[in-house]
Length: 87
Image (tube, rainbow, N blue to C red; front, side):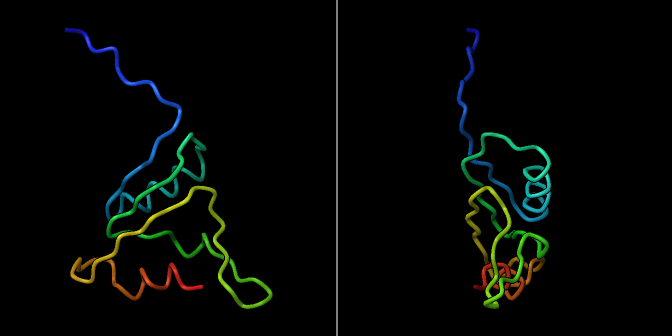
């Protein structure tokens, strides 16, 4: 039986570890119809944030991102993941 495939114009990209960093780079250079991204054991790079005049971090990234962090990952330190979400 031949598959017709699924047709959609909206996607959520899921990535783990270094895949999250690569996904961030990809979405920055290749805007797609991604309505969101889920990073597991990963985070947005520091360059995605800027400091406002009030001293708050502002995310400079067009795609909404959910980050799932775990302290036993061994690669991405929990403080680095927390830093990515500090406001």
